[in-house]
Image (cartoon, rainbow, N blue to C red; front, side, top):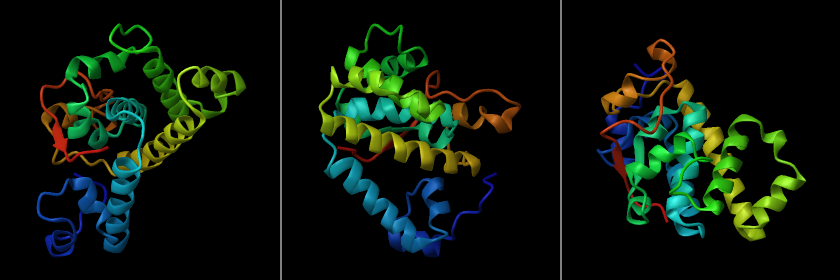
Amino acid sequence: MARIAPAPPEVYVPLMGEDVPLVMRVHARRPERAVALVSFFGAWMAETVTLPPRLVEMVRLRIAFYNQCRSCMAMRYESALADGLDEDLVCSLEKPEEAENLSPAERAALRFAELMATNHLAIDDAFYDDLRLHFSEEEIVELGQIAAFCVGFGRLDATWDLRDDLPDHFKDQGPASGGVVATPWGGTEWVKVGAMG
């Protein structure tokens, strides 16, 4: 059971509709902020993003793994699915440095995402020089902003233990399940959410 009770339907339904993930129902405890968050996320991740949706989704899922945010790991954005994200690609996130189905740019972005989630101070001048081999300055800024958003909100959402509305693979993993590490790979079901990008 979630550590923070979700807002009642009379609060979140008028703002976001009936089919709202548990994570957003909890955020709706502060309805005005939940609406702002949805608006911000939509504008920031869909309307202004220039990186490919497939790359953004892999970065988001890799960070979700390190955050152990099961809500984030259980989601797949429609735009990323349309851009070539499939479960084979998601499975490659277990060991991206060994994956044959990733480009060098994708590997660099995933390494950046991993370090943002685990050891951000290891991202030094040489690391940024390597990113510049694959991305423009503007794309590097965008990648960093996306990673920062995912690290922060993913960690918060993970502390809330939001798994009641997730497929079994994600309910049965994670810190609350006796220490079993949750992964975005290996499940047969996930939650499709609206377009991103």
